[in-house]
Image (cartoon, rainbow, N blue to C red; front, side):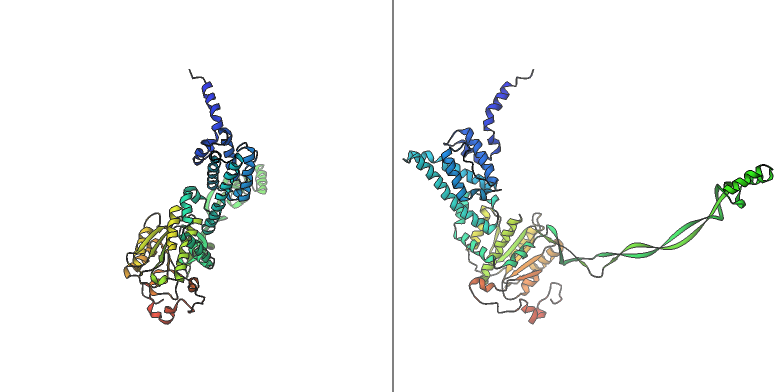
Length: 496
């Protein structure tokens, strides 16, 4: 016999007021349950409504039932002055952060009263502290969004106190300064966006061409057998017709009968005499138009591939000090911005002398921001060894997660790759489809750079970013190719 349903219904009725907990994130449970202001049930319902209103871009309702009427009016005015609904619209992570902060500040009202403040003064002090806290936070959040783009996931996953420590460091101020520098390098973002091989685009890739066929009309001979009826040939059967020469003997017998001969004449007039059916077949050769494919004399460019992971090798040697150093940091920052905006992976190798390579996975999280600010705050010095970072980059491309990555090389070109390293890069291009894009932060292409890069983007006025108000003294980056054409050779031998 099944147990009675009365206890179950009673339990559901008792738990119904706590149902907002099923819809609220766990990060809001503690602050909502263990709170000193107001009864629990109205507080749960009010926090749920306020969270939904913030995500929808609306402010709190002054008649929500929690907090009390006087505090709710001050709270609505504070939210309006800070433009909290505008900031939280569509961003659940930020709305949850605001609510946790609000619950903490409102929970301090009894403590302020215990310290001698009046009820009104305690309420005003809690709202003023909340407003001051978020006025400063939104300045930092706006600055973070201006540098890196939307940062909702970052606020959701990172501890705010750790994040604020990063945003107040000198390294972050350098990041903000480099972000302003990017405004003067608009073509750099276009170069970085084209990295990766995860998705085809509509643009042709002239560096990747494949043999193509085109359709054309052609006349092809075709043998045809045509049937010619009523021509003496093969007898196929019996049919009705008016052909006297091919009528059956039974029909001819009618002509000898004095009365049935009239029947014969009627059948002949009506073409219903029983006759032999015969025909002949004629073989004929005709020309028919049919589609044909022929190979084109010139290959057709394939569709260009974009998106996917990015590997960035940035030269941090002593020759990069000054304006070149600022541009190199701008390359790294723009790679991080692009990877964050398009949800791509980004890994940076900062290299200088032998054995001096720093691996930096740069995602927009607390750890990635800390590594980015530390890199932006350091100065470049040391020698130049391109072999180690390229070797590590090729190892990563051999893994499944990075097999569709492209390589970006930012340098002044003052290096020389060993034949083994250059051959390894060439093999990766042929076997894995690797593309190498170089950002030249110097005056001329070098043999070492041209051996590795498929394409070179030249930052001609790099000196201006180091404080020199002077134009580039050279008219072309291809000075070596212009004046020493025999010096530049591809790995296969012909001069470039």
